[in-house]
Amino acid sequence: MADMVPSITLDAETRALESPRDHTSELRLWLRMLTCTNMIEAEIRRRLRERFDVTLPRFDLMAQLDKTPDGLSLGEISRRMMVSNGNVTGLVERLAEDGLVERRASDTDRRSTFVRLTDEGRSAFAEMAAEHAGWVGELFGALSSNDIDILLDRLSRTKASVENQSSKGEGSR
Amino acid sequence: MADMVPSITLDAETRALESPRDHTSELRLWLRMLTCTNMIEAEIRRRLRERFDVTLPRFDLMAQLDKTPDGLSLGEISRRMMVSNGNVTGLVERLAEDGLVERRASDTDRRSTFVRLTDEGRSAFAEMAAEHAGWVGELFGALSSNDIDILLDRLSRTKASVENQSSKGEGSR
DNA sequence: GGTAGATATTTTAAGCTTGAAACAATTTCG
DNA sequence: CGAAATTGTTTCAAGCTTAAAATATCTACC
Image 1 (spheres, chains in turn yellow, green, red, purple):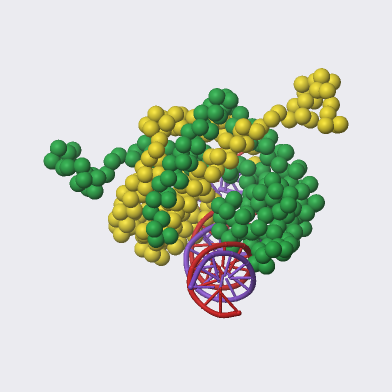
Image 2 (cartoon, helix red, strand yellow; image 1 turned 90 degrees about the vertical axis):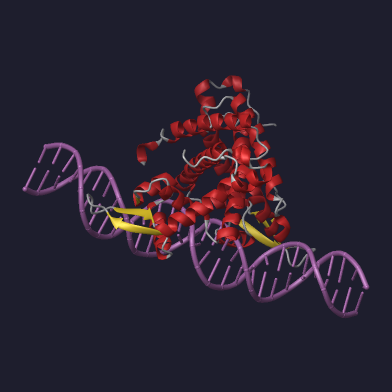
């Protein structure tokens, strides 16, 4: 460590710029969150394919529509799923080809298209959703209801923290 | 609640088959984990592109290589990143085109290729990693070190639970 | 030694995903 | 009213991702 510099020579401002704080535990947490999420997602993806020959994005999109029987605009689906607009266009296109959703022009805004589940889509989703809930229950099975509550709480704080930080540098966006 | 059935009429076996337990809180937890992860991932992806014009998968792959100066086989990268083999083939191909990684045949196994960072790749990654750590520190900034410890612990339990459940039905796999 | 099975990688086809550009329609406001 | 800004969607090119099939090599064991 021949190049170590006594930090006493740096004021707080300089230190903030040149000798960054240690983020090891935050990095470790981020990695662990990612690993957990990826494992669960992979498992659910695999079961959806195996059991129903359906992809996860399609299932997620149908889940959004199932919550809103009157249908949603493409933009609203995009916001709720946190994916790009163009992505939703394509997903809806393929779901419509399979007869699972239907599109209808908005009465009040000629730019806008509403999407909703067909009867076939609704019943297909109902069957998948029931099994899906069981899988999730299984996968989290070793957690006590107390663990779950704690995770829910700390993840809420995490979400708030991220929202707060993400919006800081939004000038150029 | 006209269709409610007294559960006293069903034995445990029947109940397990016909009236599944309630998984509401597990589903809520899963959704919240997913939302958190997606938000953070999107923010990091955006910053990597904006600041370094690099994609998240490339950054992740370089991070794996940076941890192992001697290089890794494609299969080992695939396992550590939890993505398919073919995916890694393509990523490495593109990183090699940009001069950030290099491939070298294994001495002992002619099937196997080792990949490692070039000097250029290593220094490019060092610069990105430093900023990346700062971003993660920022995004999780509102969490106390106690919150972080609690999350680390509960996510470990979650991971163990998922691993345990995923391996149960592996007969046909 | 030879063969059966396992392992490492690549290829392929299909689908997912993004960011940016292009359009169209609506809203705002001078 | 009409220009300017905003909003909703699509298109596009590039890249990511997967599962499955194909290839090549290695290992185990008879």
